Image (cartoon, rainbow, N blue to C red; front, top):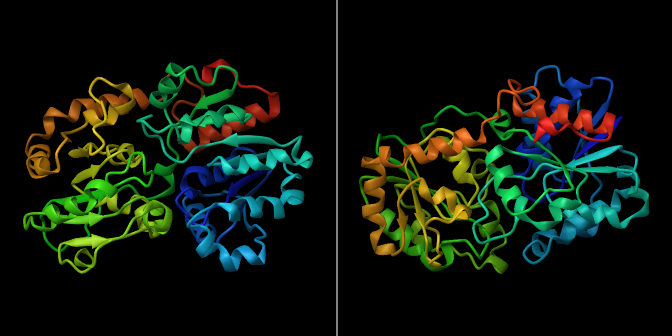
Length: 390
């Protein structure tokens, strides 16, 4: 068997959601050829770093061909379109058609279906995050998920939410776990020289769910005025990288503030560096909230769009801490979250428990990367998965 993992984005944030499956598969099926296929230097470097965490893995990390025009023009084009991603797929279709299956963390690679050369290649979807449905049908809640041959789900919580939406009835899928936890360090981290609580403000990039456009500056102004806090401003990597379409601009007064660390999209903004270094999560509709509560801690959520979230399972994460309906209430919400965290700990723990792999599931004691690799192997060898995987 020949299996490829496609990493095809101008940012490397999707790498830890898919590459671990390739490294684990190379150990589970050492007689198979497994290639990690990268379209950027950043993706390749991240994949190589993750490879070092998988002893005895034998996957090959290789570069995809990128058309010259897109190497030159993409810094401009990416503001408006993901045309580079499709161009990379088209430029490599002959190569990609030689694989028995391709593992991918995003939807754009479905464009390969347009080529008759790809007719025999299975497509396996990993997603890249496991947030709630919120009011945005993207990620795992995108209807195109059902067009993949196999879907790997990051936990039972997500699976149940999708089943409740009537999803995956006719699509092979397996509940795997969250391989990103194996790809990047998990130990707490200290980034400031004092012991003041650290708040990470992590607005999502989707205009339909982001707090940045309506409240962002006011939020940072309030945080900047608090001498009892340190602040990390680490939005989704695309919020400012696609600023022309996302409309994100950061006023200069925040860039050199002594208690605010600003990162508008480096690797650290997506490899859990800032989540590990923070005492309180401040956000809106980002899936990173579930990465943060992997070690339960205080959270505060921003609701500038007046979403009807109470009792709504699509906003489950907003039960993990106070929800701010008026930006004037931000300070009191932060204080409550820090001093009364035990009020919200049970909700966070319940979500973690719901995500846990059941003891009767296949390879229940194995890490997520290995479970995903074994599900892929079973599917490729038998043409289906046992129902125990779901």
